[in-house]
Image: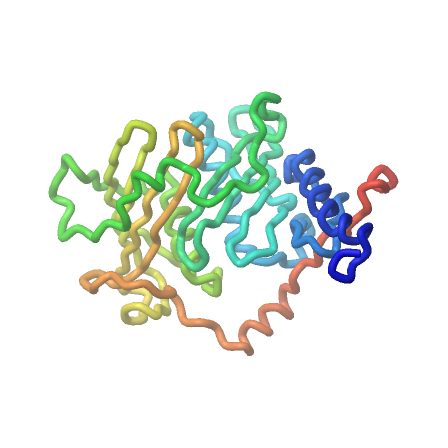
Length: 324
């Protein structure tokens, strides 16, 4: 007996979680529907996204995370894969979560659909601070000599050393050696700029309605590139309008607001990090806070009735997976 618990039960209390995470690692962290977490383990929660009539948790953010993984791959490989739809995702059941996302992408070069894997880890809750640690087609299995981390630890990339904190919004962008102002065709031709803006707003305020996000209009974008030996850092100064309700600054769709998004690419690991995203009206002092007011309980309940949260994929004991 140990602390009133039989030895056999106490051993299972320790061994059970270890066995569970070993099975998760063997699966790569993506296909875990047939792995059952022990009762004393806060395991991963799998969700099936292909039933369009049911809403899964954090639907807007998960879709943005999937698109961010595709963008990371396109940026590094020079491809032009386009987001098609989500298949499923697994997430850790913690306030600051990590996601293993399986999606379908369209490859215009081959006119075919590609199953794609994305791993995203939130570094901080309530603001934009994300790390993309996996972004690859499912067919491109990692080398046996390189074992992908199931859930990377926080702060393990080189960008933590080179991150000097959020920059101030410049008084102007006249220094052409430091800043480059994107032209309208460049803004329109690079949809990932809007992706950064949407991530900044939705990370800062998870209650922002989708129709608010759809009305955003980018006014100006200035780019500042800072190159280190092992980390590439780019700052994006985005001015936008179209947000009807704001907690910082005055309300109104015609009010211009601004967001700073910082992008780090760790050249030694390939990890891709986005940070920043605080919004405020042009001319005001920068301050943290949600971009929209919190919805009332009545509004939230009405939304849940229209789009109930998806129940997790049914857990199947690992020994019986072959029967399904």
